[in-house]
Every structure is written in C-alpha cells, then in structure tokens.
Length: 532
Image (cartoon, rainbow, N blue to C red; front, side):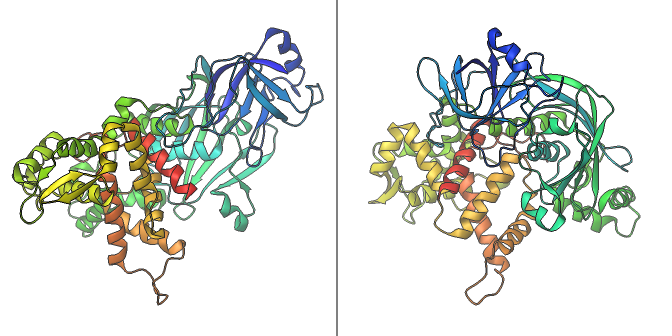
C-alpha cells in the first residue's frame, strides 16, 4: 500500500502526493528526467501514471470524472511494485481513504453531489494559438493544465475562438519522444483517414513546457482548412480545474466562410456598402452568427466571454456540488408558479387562461417583461407564462380543477422538497419518450454546455443534419419535413425556457451563456439521457 495525500483533481485525474519516505522510490521509476509515463484511459477505468516533470513526483490516478474525494491521506494498492525499469503505466487494485470511505459516485442528478476539496496548483502550458493566414491575425493566449486531453483541448479552442464544433479536427506535430503524430477527432473519423484517435491522448505527450517556441498544428474543418498554430510560450501554474484565456485579438472567423481567403473576401464585401453582394453578405452573416450590421465586429474580442466559456468546460471536467442557491435559481419559474398555486389554486378565465393580473406579475417577477410584448398581461401575448403553465400541467405538477389551477399531489410534494423538484425537472427534460426529441435535447445540451450554440437561425438546419445522420425518416422512408424539424426544435427550446438556465445577455446582441446552476442541471440531463 502506498500512502498518498490528495492535493487536487481535474479532468478525471486525481493528484496524489507521496510521503517523503516513498518519493525516492517514485523518482526511480522515471525513464529519464522530465519524461513522464502516460496512460491510455480509453479502456482502463482506474490507472496510475507518474509525472516526473513536476517539482515533486506525483501519482496521477485516472478515474470516473464524477468520482469525488475527501482530503487525504489515501492508500493506493498497485498491481505491480514500483521499479526502475518500468515502461508502462501502473495498474491500480484500489484507492482507499485511510479512515473511512473509498471513491464514491453519487446519483448524477440528485443535487447532492459531495464536494471535492482541492488545494494548491497544477502544472500547465502557456500557449499562443493563432489562425494561419488571417489578416489581421486572429489569436488567443491560453493557459491550460498539462493533463488536458486532446479532445478537451479541442473544446477549449472551439470555445475561445467562437467555433461551433460542427466539423472534424486534427492535431499534427512531433511528440516529446520525437515521433510524428497525426491525431483526428472525433474518433470515428479515424477509420477512413488512417489516423490516431484523439481520445486518451494527453496534451503533455505532445508539448514540452520547458521548450518555448516549439509548436504543433491544430486544424479545424478540413473543407475550409482553418489551421491554428499552437506555440509553447513556457510553463504556467493554474489552480486545479482552471482554464484561462489571458489575451487575444479579433473576432473568431465566421463558421463555413470558406477558410482564410473566403473570410477575408467576406470582410471586404461587408466593409464596402457599394459592393453588389453587400446586402446579401450581411444577411448571410446574420443568419450564421445572429449579429447584424454594427453588431458584427471583426475586430472585437470579448475575453470575459471567452473565459466564461472556459469556466463552463471546467465545471464539466471538474464537477462541483450543487448549492441550494444554484438549485433555487434554476427552478425559480417552476417554484414561483407552484408557490402561487398553493394552497387554494389560481383562478382561471372562462377560456382556461391565467387572469391578466397574474400574467403581469409572472412576467415582471420572473424577468420576462419585454416592451415588444406590450402590456404582457395576456397569456396569448406572454408566451413564456403560457408555456410554463402548460408544461407544469404536462409534468403533472399542476392540474385544472373547477376553474382553478391547483397543485397535484406531486406538485405539493415537490414544493416542500426542492431536491425532489430538481430530480423531477431533470427527468422531465432529460427522459424524453420520442427518439427525435431525445436527440434534439442532447444537441441543445451539448451546445449550451460547450458555449457553442449556433445562432437561432441555424439551429433548425443543424437539427435537420443531425436527424439525417441518425437515420430519421418518415414512415414512407422520406426525409423528415422541415415543418417537423421546426416543431421538434420548438418543443425542446420551450422545455429549456421553463427554467432559469442562462445568465443575462451582455449587450443587445450578446449570446446568453449558462449559469453555474444551469451547467449542473444540463450535466444531470445529459446523464439521465444516456442512461435511458
């Protein structure tokens, strides 16, 4: 048994520091100085690797990313003793907390995830990433943990440059052992391209923080050919679980704009009101980005938004417990309606709508008021209130009874027990009966969690493509009609709108991003969706 102390966890890696009496034996396992042993985590659920590049030797234990740990010490039982001649990662028999529990994986959507106590810093890369052949140069400076995998690095690049993760990607370079590498993601694309799958490849296999100026290439969208030069500036240290965008310049290119040459031509047309394609190009940009006229700024770069997107990724790779405040904020629209329906119910009009005064209160108190809706005191003109009422009836939390909207037994129970209401909402959104709705729910979940949701005008197109790829057809074998796709998109969008998942937009045209509670809700939705 090896006595170790937990010093942090990130991206499914548990950082364990050895006691002084064991460190010398750990050092002996390194093949050569600053050459770590790495693992392929695609098949092994619990493995150990030694990172001798750190100031003090660390055992890094790769685990289920939902697993949680107390502060050490822990005992790690290895299948084979540590030895100088080691050339493979160490398999682990068990990881045990010295006093009580071992690794725990709580119910994904219970809202009661045990906290992960973290301390100290982790080794990181300081990287400058620039898109080749862009004028002026589009670049970002990122600091990311050395333990980041290639798929995770890909998502970090997507988030900070504003890409939509809708194409294949590749990483090319010479790794630290001097071996040329061509890595493709997603993994299923490697079958036709004779390349190495991205899953399980760790960034520090490919880059050396002690060699500034070395680089690799990251290419996105093989059709447009966006090549990103990833240059090492040097080592860095981050708080465990942190990803940081330090600096950058210029807006990321517009998706599907034809590569550097096509994007450069697009900008020239937009800058010339006399160009015959000016109006058409502006309209196309609006359809792709949701930004029109002055709101499309090629020179703009929002570092705060880039870092918020990185935080969304960090919360997924390094889960944190759900707080009562986060839970209540997400559930606020539902709880508001349930609280107002208790104890005697809400009076309805003869047509079954909420009374105008109640509609106005809901719009004002839930932050849904908008001048475009006029007075906002009729459900027919206050769509969010109408959808909330209808959904709560569908979800069996409310029902109509003698001209009033009253709590069901489930609604009463959930009002008294917020954690149970959370679970009910996760199930209501995540466990969809129809396969197509389940697919689109998964799409929305991935879009929002990655901070890469396409503009509203492109979502139906993206959904249509996903349904086609998944084999959805009509009973007669024809492609799904556009109006069906639009209806499915509307169903999923309205499911999400019944909850407060998003932070307010920044500016008139800015895109809303998830709150921390919204991230945790959608992670739970993703988990129940995968479990069926």
